[in-house]
Length: 143
Image (cartoon, helix red, strand yellow):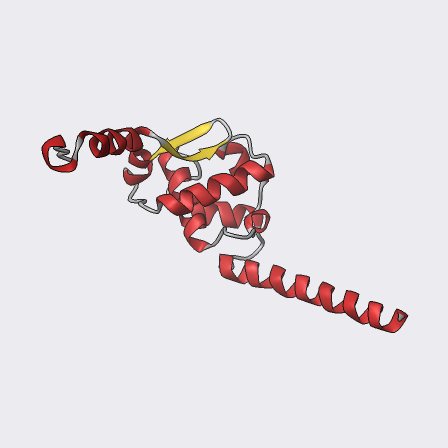
């Protein structure tokens, strides 16, 4: 990208240049930049930041560890949706993890049948709602 300080101003150019080299997806020891993700056709950098926060909270140490030991169900967290899962697939692809179809292979590895991530999140949401209803019902009967 041609960044001209005469038009944009030096502050803007400096900020844009520094942003280009920053890590937007950090999974433990694995750090990917915008360029790393763009090389595999991924431009969802906000989703990459959400995914970074979620994986840090889970204590994931690397993309390889995530691929091998964490199921997609483990990732069904607030602010982690299908776009974040697509970013994860791009990260696997960028690092050569999971073969030709890394995201599909990742899901198959951890599930007997292939279902969509939205289905997983909906199952978890329904289970949480049922738990809340049961608690309310027990509280009302105890009173």
